[in-house]
Image (cartoon, rainbow, N blue to C red; front, top):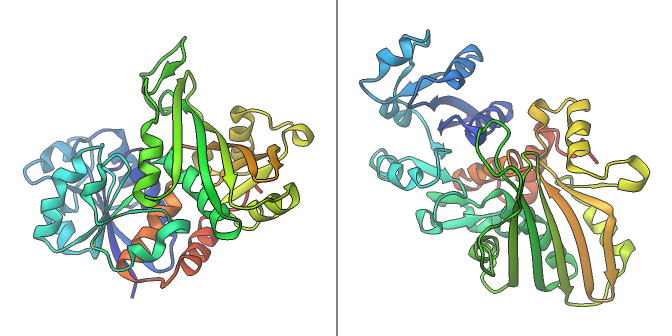
Length: 340
């Protein structure tokens, strides 16, 4: 029997999680929750996704031609787990309702760590998520960092990490953000990214700084790693090539020397919304000098956490006993590895 899943919120992350759930062989999307009748609810309805709304607001949705499938409480009665993709901070407010109906929940990185029993990244701590009632999937930048760090630590060992994060100003659909400046985010060391990494790897020596740049497409990370032993370029490249969730590209040979060109590649290969689930590592920007490793990677903020959300669902509900089993299913049905 498929696990019954609900998604609370249908914005940048929610609509992608809902779509991913629908593609999984062991999950069934029972419906989404919408609070306002904007254009996204029409999109969901036209895709045949049941829409649930707060009690008393049914008429507002019917005015835009969407007949609700029921109330939020009715959805919660019918699911095993809800993915809370509501705006940051709202998840904590929704948690008592999930507890009332005995429903497990996966929260997003915009929530504080104490909303859940564990902060989650598949490669790092899948087993810690097994059978947990509440799991928090860390943010997009943290997910990109943790995939890289935990892969390296499993096979070579990581002693220390220093990261510079060039952040996008806003998502493409948003009509806000900086225009003609580069902003410190925040004016402090470390940025919250290092602190978020430590919610998963508390003993890791890591510092980060972050800057906001006037772009909407992707983040870029410059990551400096001190390894626990000497390595070489061939070993690191082979390791980075070993999992579908990291895609190595060559800027010099392929002309892919910008985030804009990476986005265009994803479009040309048929990725809906140009969703890029993989860490995009520039092969030209990997350097190994004994124990010192430098890597530059790009992270698509809208899509990179989607595979981890699916894995977190499996961990919480015990649908897969280990990370490798869950990743194989997730990666296959989301066609992860297409950009490699």
